[in-house]
Length: 251
Length: 251
Image (cartoon, rainbow over all chains, first blue to last red; front, side, top):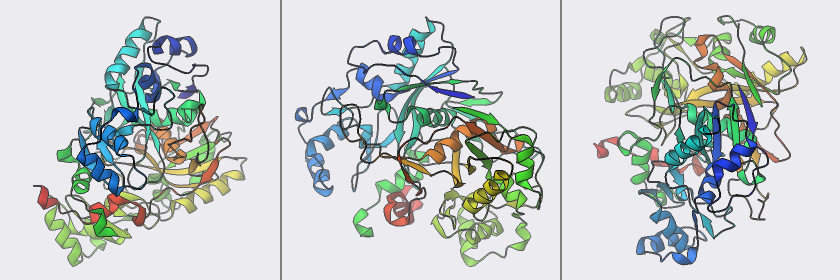
């Protein structure tokens, strides 16, 4: 399996034809194309200015509890979220498409067209649209819209998938057996996340100019498929535990 | 960057020379060698029989609350853990080397030499020992001992690093800036986890006979290094939240 950074993509601005910009530079003979959510967000104009957000009482209350927090920014996070999982010491939120991320994935460092850059509205639909556009140029692979994200238990960030099209999210090994005939314990493998992590290694920080990568020689293999990547609240005990957590009790 | 599964490694048994078995089949002109923790555990004889565990009161109490749980297995998990983060509906535990995993990573499906297969005792030391042995054959890269692990918020498992040697765990971007001069938000990238995820895509389930993979063309790059991969309790709010969580309150 080979992973290649796509070089030469120019800075993307609202209204730019992202598929064309990628298609000019990428080797379209790939099995998977990974595209950073930042450029999808930029192409679809997901910039915003903090001045446009009028902080609600909840935003003010949360901002009061977080060091150097801007209540307008917290309001933006609330508006971009379906649910707030943790209010402080940092805001962890569920986006409408199911991703759990700090500040609902809103980026403050990466927004030349405004104060902040929101996540793409529907990464799965953007992945499908990119795939359709590139199919016209002969691309037959899958598309993943990727992000970087922290996680519990482990330090640092790693690449993750926000949306995907043209490949399943997971290999489902349930019912398969190992060499000794034992049923496998690790039953579902989140391949779109693993592909995003692999791509992130060569993309580096998206604004180094490599907001896309192609993956060659990836085979999903003869396994069952699952397209469920985001846990729902009912089956996610960590999400439930955080909702009942009082950080002050730990201080 | 290229990722190649290492084919032809035979079933590993206690006392086998794992470095020799890998060295015979792997392309040692690699930047990184990923080795599944299962074969490290097998080579170092980390098999155990449930009959050897006498359940403590805590093990019995936990087993009572989990469907079809064997109190001897729960006792094994307790003995392999430094801390139990969550007791039910499943046991989430911190291993002595800092990894947080369900059942302390103990494998019930993959243990031809016993009822269960424990995780390697000190994956970082095993990675260093493997690296030293392979250096004698000309290998100059890093070694990662990998596992697959579930995670909060997202369904499915993905490859993660348990131990590593000869490369840093993380790229530290703190202080670096993007194209527009803004300081980067995603400040630490857990490259050993991303490499493990990439390797897992071609290793598949370890007992399909591909318990190792080599990575070629990986460059750490000119970044600061960090070797901290496992969060400690004090900075991990999820771990704190789970410790105070009562699952029955959610039912």
